[in-house]
Structures are given as structure tokens and as C-alpha cells.
Length: 132
Image (tube, rainbow, N blue to C red; front, side, top):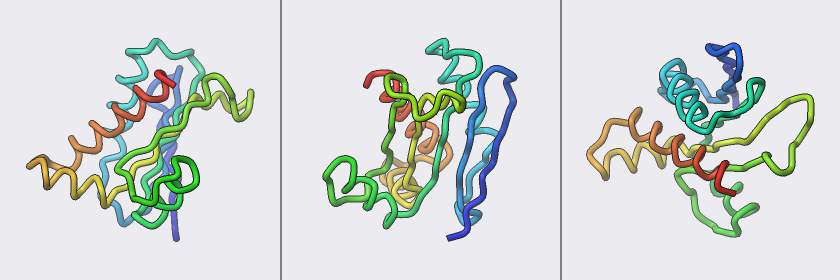
């Protein structure tokens, strides 16, 4: 699968890394700004980074099975590295993995547009990073 990495550095203090396939229709700038506003609520260290990955149902099902022992494509999963950093040089505080097809279905079920639904999933993922 062809994935592109979009690194948006709007705030000189934090970096939001968005990984997405070009087939997923997302507004990366808006999502980056939203994610940054969520990080600001938690007063994240100045040089922290957050990874947000958009995946399909098959990949999300694999990830959910491996890490949550659930054989289902969940809408969102988050992984916190606050207590166990993956690398001291990366300063990655966590990752939010969003199943794009599930987000679209969830938006339709709740009579919402897709972008606000994705924002809600990002917010939920970030909350879980800090609560774990």
C-alpha cells in the first residue's frame, strides 16, 4: 500500500506526524491544528511529537488483534509512550491509529460529517494517551 508521510510543523514546539494513504479524504491542516489544540490542553513538553495514522479495516483488525486481542476493526486505537519512550531522540509521546472506513461509517450512523467524526476520534485517542 502506498502511504505518504505528512509532517506538519505549525507550532515550533510540537510536531504532528500524519500518515495516510492518498485515497483517504482528510484535511491534514485542519486535523493537525485540531490535534495541536488537544495537546495544548495537556501542556505537552515543547519538543514532543504525536503520530496519527489512518489505516484500512484489514490493518486495523490486525492491530486490534495483536494489541487488544479483539478480532474487529475498531474506529480508533491509541498507544502511549509517555512512560515507556520508543526513543529518547524522537520524543514521540504516542500514536493514534484511526480506521478511516470505520470513521466514515460512524459518521453516517451519527449523522455527522466525516471530518468532525475524525476530530472526535483524535480527541479520544489523545485522551487515552494521557490516561494510560
